[in-house]
Length: 631
Ligand code: GCV
Image 1 (cartoon, rainbow, N blue to C red):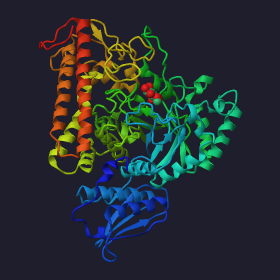
Image 2 (cartoon, rainbow, N blue to C red):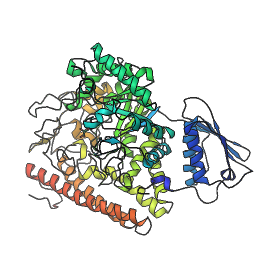
Image 3 (tube, rainbow, N blue to C red):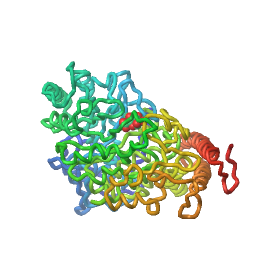
Image 4 (cartoon, helix red, strand yellow):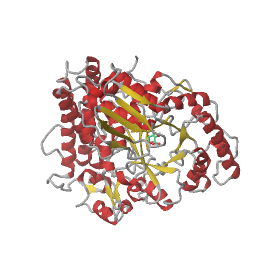
């Protein structure tokens, strides 16, 4: 096989419970059959009589399962999908040697999915793990890898996948129009066997681009008819299709604003068209002015999404989910939680994370994002925790056609942890990471200890040697890899830190852009006052002089210098820690990760030197500890 099965490589071993020797069950659906097949493959049953694992399939739509002991038998009950999740849960627990099966489990959200930014030509926007396995030479493709991908997703509880890039271009535009219905149907069925629904990104301008209409105005009856007819044909031909993902009025893409209409009018147009087919619309909130003038001190990109969508709360159709990036700007290593996720009351929200490490080391650096997911899910707003308020969850996928799916072997932990937390947001980040480590590398405590330690520290280490304190955006424009402190300063994207020789940061409190008010009075006050603003976000919310004293007495500048030195030293230490695992983990994985660490260390040193030297030249304030900073 030219790819790994990741955490599914390991099977239950050692002494298994008596019921594991025999399987029995009447299964009717493709998912029920898939569950039975997984059990047969993993447990290799060898008895005809005696205690058994029995599957009882129920009718219905649910995804939960129940597990009870009857004498020496174990009975697993649920719909086909429920049986599938129950099966993977049992197998995971058996593999980990954990016999305490839960009585019942069900997922926290009905939609738990990955968004692929795959293009029809096989490339992947912000992809760091090879080419697409969904598209080759302009066409969707379905093969053994499609099924194994679905198995991987189902094994961690994920149930959806959007096949193509939200920037719908070129041949991808034809996914909507029938040209690839046969391929889509096949992919949909294959994913569907494992309970994974198929979603497609579509262009809001499709009536113009494909339909030959003069407009895509949501109020135009011909546009409405075009969407309805197109959806009628597509959903009939691709029965596993769950709906559309739409990036509108964003980064040059057309949307309802193009026609003077609201985001709600745009989303509801499509919601009406998919509704008769049981479909839903995932409508992205990533709407902001991307042609800003850096001299304009008033426009604050962080405000844009809330300003656009909050006044529309309650106006979206019931089959619309607003897809909200976890932070207000764009997947930086540290951002506050998007105010939309804590303030919308009458609209279904889907939190969007980014496993593709666009700004977090591009799968050349280890950067475990489980702590970021948890931070957002556990964040408490005025009406409760994010995890209790959202209705769905998704992440930009970090997968591609590489042997190990994620480029960096350790980046697979992000995929695993996202699935586990999407199913159960109460799980601790440490648990998800430890499970992944044990399923991937086995139970040698030297390995699990070292790998989990590397993973759990990695986000904070990356943050220190790149852009601490919430500054963000000091990366190379376009590629977003490597340091460029002023790369985005005079550009049109609205991502400025406005550093001078005296101060750095954008003031977003009441005396500045007023962004903090979007959180409501209590949180707004907390973020708006320098003394109560969490230090890790200080420069996201405030503009401060370099001489500002941090809580531990260091100056702001000294803290930034120190973070770069210590972050880089910790990256070096993580690389050394990995080297101690030679001979304890499979050699090919050891070598691949060692090579990535060499690049991470090189890049961390570059970040340290470029950022520190730039600040030293700007301020002429030396490092209090006299370390080398290049003038
Ligand atoms: C898919 C950022 C990325 C783009 C991405 C966009 C989005 O701007 O750099 O590559 O486009 O976010 O989320 O739509």
